[in-house]
Image: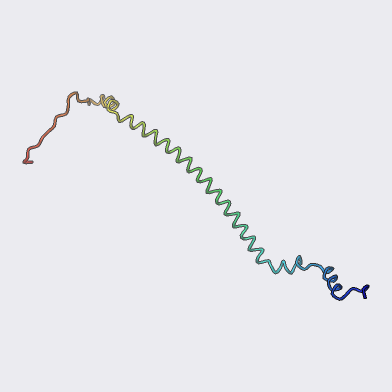
Length: 114
């Protein structure tokens, strides 16, 4: 009796020699919708990454343009402040026959009836 394997041991040995059905085509066919879903999610994930990269590049371009426009604004503002000084305006209007007043301006006072 010790030489013959028991029924329990014999069944265990048969299960070990059977091919594994997990890697079979049935499991793969059964899960095709899930595999397609995972593929669809992967495509969406990749597309989202590309769109995000494109947006980052666009933001960098706009920030660079903003910096350049800020520099232009500051240079034009300083030029305008320089051109608005009284002595610069006086020299620019001298050919037109306009001169600065040498005396104080006179104050005109209206009567109460007006």
